[in-house]
Length: 243
Length: 182
Image: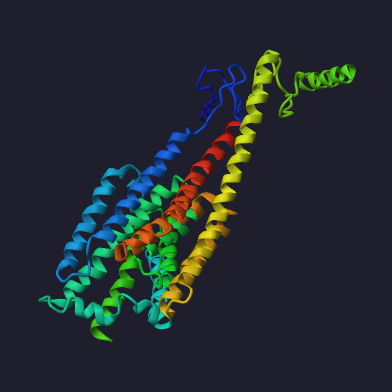
């Protein structure tokens, strides 16, 4: 039978052995396991830096000029990859894809399909403000292969970039500051905010919360990337082949 | 008269004296089963086996931290009132505008109200989100109308400053609570 090693905690100041539940050392009075306040301020600063960089990019980099769509997508991707490299330690877990389960992916995609159906059919007026099917078609009409470019620019690039930014970077930073449940709500809200369509908040924020919930539940971003792709691809498909 | 003054002073001095009746029970947090060899209580850090001066110093620092916590909570309350104020100001600034703009105003007003209510349960998350939303919204409108940023600039700075300071206070309160082991 293996002997179990019992590790007795010791004071970080005077190395006196402590009882397991002791908060203070009985010999020197030093308080044990106290997170320094500077770490919390550093985490807040990191979060504000990431969010600030994303906000300034969205506000000041023009996306609605013809020909800028793919450049915008590439620049956004470059910015997010750059930030991810800087904060790679906190992003490690979000990018690991362990224990893939097809049934779980199917479940999330089904839920996303229901959400997409509700958005496209029950809230068409609010959804269309800013990005109607007509505007998607007209935006890419000058390209040689309009559907391919639209698909790349709307269905492929944003799911990867946005999920990496929100559910990867921002969610990871927020988890250090607030509880995971609050981080899900806040990330969803910020997802809605950074689209800068106030009327679109009605569907953007719940969608964001749903994707953040998946990230929290699974520990990585890849299922939410798939759900986001499904929604955006459906919008592009409908714009070109149905409406 | 001098007799009553000295009696009051004697009562005050007696009140301040730390009399440890049972050395195995902490005078401060009433934790039981303290060992004679333990100078400090392992639960609250009170110098049970230390000098009277050390014990008084501990109690004074404890009361100071409690006062700081009370002051911090007041600031958090002020930040909550500021959010309610921001909601009202936001609503009235969109009053009388056309339908779509008014709807936008109602949504942003509801968001501010929602954040203020949420701050009763999760103050840090609520104030952080409210701060980000307020700054981002003003920047966004400022791109289309730069004079908007200057309109009511002092009130805007007050709102941003109060929310930012409240965030720091909340973390300070958490830290102080851990230090006094409450």
